Length: 339
Image (tube, rainbow, N blue to C red; front, side, top):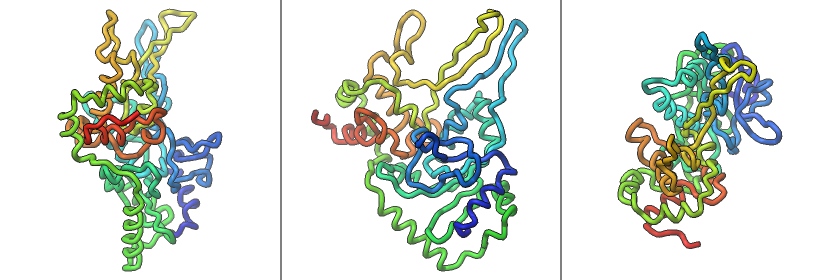
């Protein structure tokens, strides 16, 4: 498809749902509802600070309302959507969340959001902190209805579902299903340039074994002394999914209220605090170890999808430079970084 047709094509997809995607709000790129297709920014190297999980696993929402007669689930946030501009790492993150939140018993709020969303993925330029080549999540073969690859003069479009076919047919005059040798050459050249542009890497495949062998390493204490338990890593990670629930009572009627759900983080000091005052992970080193065990080892073994999708957000946003790069390097070399 020629780039000049993109905006009109995206406008035509609104019959499949409300358009969502990367848009600029208050000078910040974020996933949100788009006023129109022209507002979408799907093909920049720049990524959002908060990943696309916020559209399927909202930061805060009402689960249900209750009174003395029972409760009524609140699904008012769920709508038919076309989510545009998800990069491969984001789609891999959603596939991981599908395994976690879709396993028995499934999370009905997340699953309904997924069922009602069409995914239009997008290739991306390699950003400075990209690690997706290391985690084998730089490309995607599933989890989308359409996927656009920007090779410069045109888009190559992969169709991943019957809905994807239906979307193409809305504006089939924009597409040419005859792939030429020149098209293949352009795609091959794009892959070569993209693969050569990664600036950072780590040995992700070795990390499960290394995590086992370094369980008692002093590395954890070193990084624990630096960690401020802010939970930033959890908020920006595409696969973190911990949450808390609270009951909010009507101040005029103690028998009425609502149950609210909001993001939480296992990095918070009180996350593992239980009745009686015992904290299973009161030490920061224990919380760090748990978080990175999930990212670099446990998710792959338990769910068949990685806990780290190589988006590089932890590298970019941790205020004290604790991330998959610094942790993996320290554990692999066995050396505590110098102050």
